[in-house]
Length: 318
Length: 249
Image (cartoon, rainbow over all chains, first blue to last red; front, top):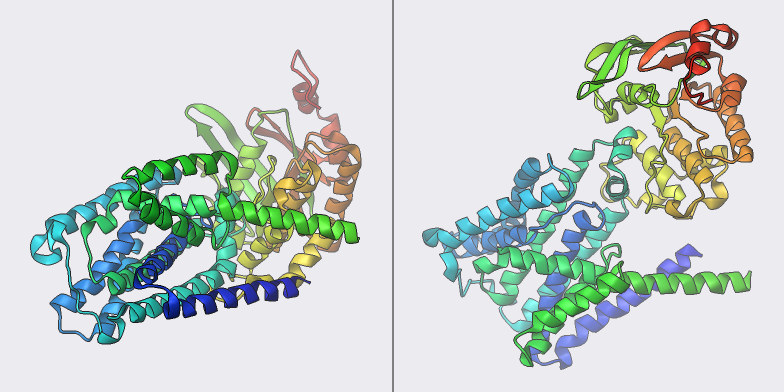
């Protein structure tokens, strides 16, 4: 029965991907750009959620890895003569490496203290990028990054985003469902007990952080393809907060919750900000309501309802 | 099998465990008893590596395991359950035990095999043993207290232990649950040949299943002997019944 339900779930997924593939045929350019942004923010938020929702680690400054990944590819493409594909690989790898270094330092602390140290170290990285004019372009950032011709058109960038997002999401899903994912969730629930069943908690958390950093770097790389720019605000702590909100809003115990959260946040920012500059106020109110009434996020709530329905359905049948 | 030699631990000046000695032979069931605050749980924490002793040594199979981190102690096939329920609340009953089995089989670094197909048999067998099989898909936070205590033991069994430490396995259980738990512990010893060290306030249970008893008072072990010897021992009677001390039996 579980298998059939699983298949049904996958059918929905295939339909969703098919619709996403067809979008460029009829949607105007602006919306294609918007959906690209939603996809890559969703990817970023999901990567955060590996350590946040599944790992229980308070990674408060996740945007650093996103920004560093983006700068990695941007610098390779603008400052070196390497073939572009090297940049596409180096970006995420630099993020993963930075994640490892910062993880090694922060993992000594737990819970909120981890988050606080992480914010400080992340801000340090931001400050370096912001100030180092000769190398990173300082607060101007880098514009007009020469990405390969194939990806320059809006549709090219869109399909690239879609493919990379789908592959990354699939990989992350596999990881969450793997033994490593189970152990990570065990650590989230109860670190002391995890040690007592033979799990080296810190090492597993560290691998989780490196994976999250890597996929954040992938999201950064995708952003460069979509937008052709990088700028220091990409790794400012306020953006990290926005990513965190995406997770909480969509549901941090659901795999697709952060993706939904990204869609809500990007849509609010785009459409509400045409009416008022105080779009963040609307987001804030929604956030308060969600925390009070849907502590598991929007998707978490929907899943709960579906579960309840199917349970009452089966008891009636039984 | 397990030998604890004059172990001492103090918390900011308070001697929680003072010069404790303990000796458990292979295949034995040994109970640790003592009034509340005698240092029983601290002693278990010192054996399993959650705390590091200030002094003294812990040997397991003649190997010095003093001060090893818990995950290393676990690899020596020592498992424990906790007095205060200590499970993975968001995972289902099945997943709770599965994580433990996965960890024991060293599969936790496996990133891409779906875990729902791994170690299913082992997990089901353990759930069968403790009698939680029909509740396997329930989120463990929603279990009754007695069932969570059983799950405690099930998680410990997931580590495929030779040596099992149970910290007040029946605390808070109803009489029926307690008798089920006694059967379970006996079964684990008889069928799986586990060596069991447990502490307990329920004297009926202690005398029913323990082969030897160790008595702890104010952090110190005062006697370790067979049930009858302990029952007749003057010091034990003093500690539990004597003077104006509150009887916690």
